[in-house]
Structure formats: structure tokens, C-alpha cells
Image (cartoon, rainbow, N blue to C red; front, top):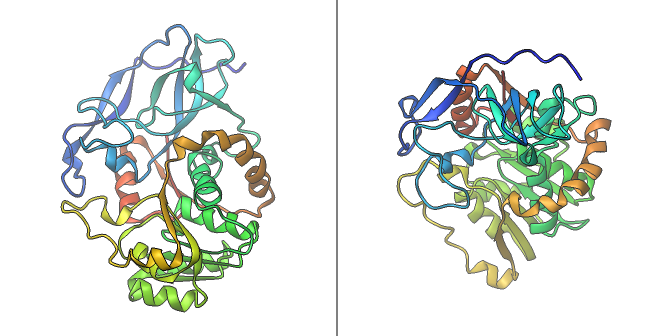
Length: 340
């Protein structure tokens, strides 16, 4: 047990004031001072150390029906977080333990012990439990291996490949025997990173020309698996390059998240008939049964350096909103983390 500091009476937290239309604006949010509650029976109080900001959070800011409840107006938003327990009223979690939970966007959080996962800061840096060894990593693992049914020898195309999920998809595919791994990203610097650091066989900057043409050049023999983080012209290009029995796992569509009008769908869906291809969407929440297998397989790759990861770290809860907007703009390389 460590001597945890006495928590203050108040802590800062981000509230959603109004639902954004198109791109979120600073006036849609407020950083407010709130009372730090005392944990009740079966609860712990956590001093958050690292917060996660992710593209899916944009969807929770809208009132539209989705797979997860919208953020409530005038209340603290939520997201992945990891921190130190400073008060415990729960068996099995002691003061000084570090836990992963889902009450981010705030400095202090009261969490039901059943919703907190104890993590070991000595086994891996705390921030990795929000990224490469957390929900982000499991998203890559489940989407590639289960949804897209990846098998050794497959040629794999990943969009948004320099992001936290995409970079891990490409590396897992390579480590598990892909014949070719191709990535797209939004800058020449990120393209260089994909090839030189993450070991992609080929990569291209989607801003440098039509995606379909650049993909055909990078994957002249077509692709067996497409992991979609972007949607739009990337999805259409992937369908155009899909091999017989090709599989597409739809993880996200960041290119259309802030659109106020529906984006047109791919114009070449009929090609799935001749390729016998399939498109399947997935949510990481449906695949938590893979978590032990994921950590067992990917953990050693992270520790040995075989699987590399990047984090973009923004300091201070006052910059949490700007970090989130940065994710939507593509400012981050790898996982975007806020350090408190």
C-alpha cells in the first residue's frame, strides 16, 4: 500500500453544453470545477493520470441513436482512463493500485470496482493500457483476425494506417505472415513512418492522387483483406482491388464523421458479386472474450520491440478538447493520449 495523497474537494471535468453540428466548436464544451465525491460501497476513487481521446467520441456528442448512449448535456463526458486509486471502499482494489476504467475527461473519478481493471505499471507503461495493450489494440486484433478472418499469406490494406488502430493492424498482419501489407495515410511523413518503422511493404499519401490508382500501384496483385478506418473513397478503392473471397472489416469512417449531409456510398458494390467478397462492420465491445488471448500474444511483441507503437501526448486536462479535435484532424501519430 502506498500513501496516497488526500484528494482535493474539487476537480476539473469536461461537460458537453450543446450538440455539435458538423465540426465541434469550443463553445459546445466547458471545463468546469466539480465536487470530488467519496466512494460508496464497492467503489473506488481514482486520480486519473492518462486520458484517451478517440474518433468514436464524436458520435456520442450527437443525439442520434447509435451503439452507445449519447453524452448527456451538462454532465461530464466519458472515455478511457487509467490512474491511481486514492480511496477504496471495495474489496480486491487497494489504495495505490492502478486501474483502467471508462470515466475519463476528468481529473478524479468514482468508479464501481466491477468496472475497474487493475493494471501493472511495472509490466508496461501506464499509457499503453489505453492504446497498444488496451481497447485500441484489441480493436485491431479482433477486427483483423476475427471479423476479417485473416490468414497467413493474405495481402492486407489498411486505411488510416498511421493511427493507433491502423498501425497495429498492419504490424499484427506482418507478424502473422501476411504476403503484403499496404497502408494509406495523410502525410508523406506518416507514409515514411509506415514503411521504415512499422514494416509495411508499401504505403501512400491519399492526398497525392486518387486512392484507387495509388492502391492499384501499391497492390498490383489485389488485396485479400481491407481494414477500413476511413470509409468514402478508400472503401470504394478497396472494393475495386478486392481479390476473390476478399474480406472487408469496417472499423470506422472518420472521413464522414463531421458531414452534415450523408456521404455517397461506394459506386462499385456490385463487384462483391464477382469477387464473392464480404463487408462486415464490428465493434470491439463484442469481442472482449479475446482480451486474454490478445494480451498473451501481443504483450510479448510489445515488450520485445517487435510491435512498435507511437503515442502523441498532450499535457493537461485543459487541453483535452484540443487533443480530441486533433484526432479528428489527423494531427496524431499513433494513439492520442492526454497526460494529467
